[in-house]
Amino acid sequence: MTSSSRIPSAAFVLLAFIGFLQARMFAATMPPVVATHFGSSGAPNGWQTQSQFFILEVVLLGVSLLLAFGIPRLIAALPISMLNVPNKEYWLAPGRRDETLAFFKAQFAWFGCIFLAFLLVINQLVYRANQTHPRHLDNPTFLIALFAFLAYVGIWTVRLVVRFSRKSQ
Image 1: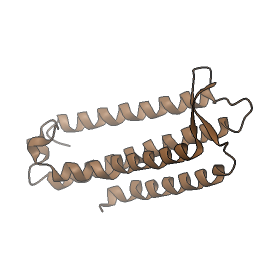
Image 2: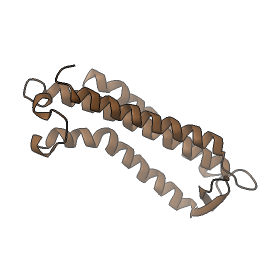
Image 3: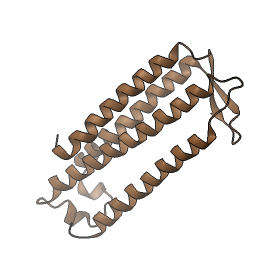
């Protein structure tokens, strides 16, 4: 593991542990049928059993793992012809390939951390909504989390495009 990917990898493990603690803390207090989808007013309009909800959490953790650690491995394993990177002949040339792959590894690890953190915030909002009567999602906090996540995705994407559009760092 490169030094540039150690910190986001450790952060990912910490976030996963926080998610485990979060789920454990709320599991005993969640109703048997959980409100999991909410309309624009914050009122619930979609439901799952408690077990379905926690299975979905595990699946989304798997998606986070895939984003953070699976995609960089896939990029490293694929032939250059199958990759869609601007100036890929330059960035994946033998002298730069390891550095480029290390960059991808760190960037996707951070992306996985942000995605997992976003999911933890959403889960916290869903947990809280199911503790209120009547059940109601905190829409302002949801919108802040959503826009922060989308802003990160936008900046992350632009950063990747700009970096690989040039033929130097």
